Length: 143
Image 1: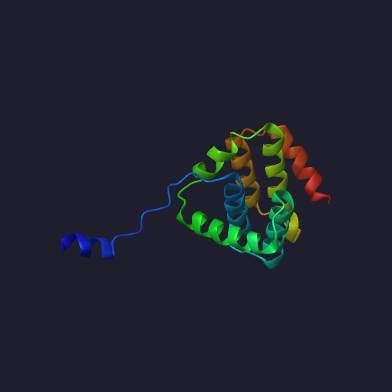
Image 2: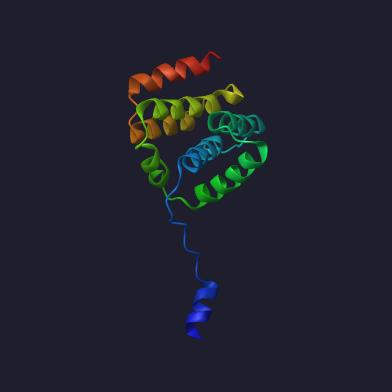
């Protein structure tokens, strides 16, 4: 009986199953969209659009992915569960992920320092060079 009561009031266990690439990218983009304290409509629309295009998803699949990504992001204590999956990808794919992140950053025409810092940290964690990250930033800023 004590076990049943304990389980009732216990904090749910975080989901520990491995995260696939789509979910890892989506969770990072969701976090990035809100990292400056404001998750703007244009940021959400950009995230949905880049996920749809990059992973060839339909609208319904994107919405499911975004919901799961938001849940996973809320449970995460750091970026490791997301970046550990992404660091195993080929270099070009990792570079594309940083490009997607910059698209989200500049979707509201504003680059907040917390957004910049997050892209820098993720790039470092997944093995994208500072040079490549800076080139991508300049490209996305002027689009």
